[in-house]
Amino acid sequence: MRLRYLFYFLIIVALLIISDQAAFFDAQSGMTLKKNTSQSLPALSPQLSSKLFEKMLPRHEVKKDPGPYDWLAHHPEPGQTFKQYILSNPSVPDENQKIIYIVRLGDFDQKRDEIISKTATMVGAFYQLPVKFLKSLSLSVVPEDARRIHPQTGDKQILTRTVIEDILIPLMPRDAFCLIAFTSSDLWPGEGWNFVFGEASLYDRVGIWSIYRNGDPHESPEAYDLCLMRTIKTGLHEIGHMFSMMHCVYFECLMNGSNHRKESDERPVWLCPVCLRKLSWALKMDEEEILSRFADMMHLFENNGFSDESGFYHEILGHLN
Ligand SMILES: [Zn+2]
Ligand SMILES: [Zn+2]
Image (tube, rainbow, N blue to C red; front, side):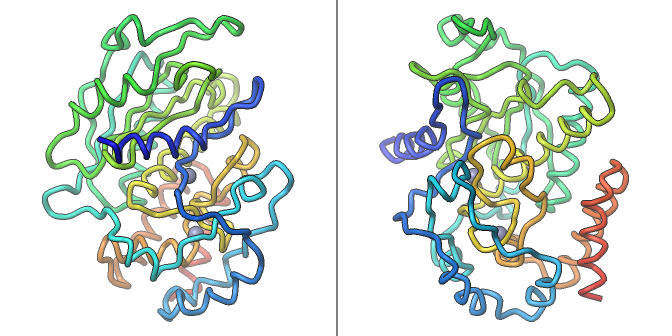
């Protein structure tokens, strides 16, 4: 139990809210902090000893120096090499626990419901694992004392800790690798907080994320795409943490930390070669399976009209073939 609270603490630290602005939810690594400098870049070569991952390099961009409000300016994490990852005894799926479960909490209109379904399909392709939905939950499962109306903004909110501990953890199926809840409600993590985008217990591999602040998908086709992309990125990034992947400091990468909305919107929706190597190891993927995953992602982004993202996967496949 103590370990669980340590995880909560680390995550809450990453949720620091300054005045009316909330930091984008991010699970912190908890590793000793060290200033990130370009000196860490020469260490890339030993992590990229596999020829396949080196071949991907031309299509990847080395991590830009952080701006004053960006994640690395406030959380100078040291990164996690491939070797550190495999030595960290990471959580990986196995034959008995390999299903990513998703549950909806609250009412979703037709467009938001569709966004969750598309996100689930994307999660399955990205992590090459089966995805199943649990029966949707009504907001009425959240007890009265875990709800509030924000005194200033009037937003109806539910308390993340109660949802995680009293609702999601007991719901976790035996064959689950992780359980992700998406809610249409706004969230708050406790006294002194305005709101959070989400919260997770990595120890339990359970988390909840809200799409309340992802924009209104009814506004325009662009707003729909933005809401979808935000929902996809949040889901994929946080499931990456459930594989025990820490934040990436080497390249522009899905696993980069993010301190505010602009930074998370600009974060790519793909893994850099270092992080992809970790995932490939965790999933025991061979070269053919890695290429087939790229093809899956390319088609999915193409089908959803995300040409930059499908173009990325198309180019990567070009470098590898
Ligand atoms: Zn994170
Ligand atoms: Zn990375």
